[in-house]
Image (cartoon, rainbow, N blue to C red; front, side, top):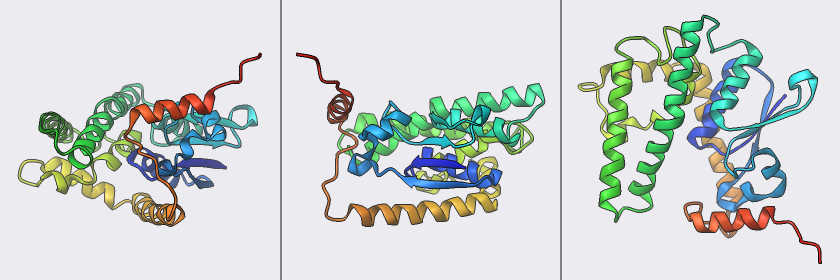
Length: 243
């Protein structure tokens, strides 16, 4: 059994898709980041970085329970555990890992910054231009890659595709069209035709609705206030000093 402690953000959805694809028994345990649940001591034992997602594999290495953080590492772990979506062929394997890390180090951070300045800090035009232009460049990188191979990692569907899709699925909002990005859009259509992806998208919507209902009437935190986040983490992890 895999326990996914998470919210349906793009990083959370990566793991949801993977779990649906591999067909392993799993359950979603809501971590409502708008309520600050990522700072609860029990969650910080799973992810000291107070981010989502985290997993607990109740049947981990040597049959013992094992917890993991970091969505990219979780995808590799689940692929290794099940022998799925990370090719055994050495070249394909390392091609897949390169493009997985490309998502983790470029697409996630840059798309995340663009989303923040487009939605929460719209008055900062310099930042909006900087990150929106970088997002467009990254779409071009994907377009070029997908002109060479049918899937992002190699000629097989892999964890590189699973990791990338949740961040890129709102491409229409960014003006990504078939004229300039035909290879990317063909890939996107193949992704959205997969039953596991469809199930994950439905579950993500259901989880968001559930979390919103749970949060009704309760005080929300500003997840974008990094100073407040630091203070919350400090309080949550402080230890009483002896007199």
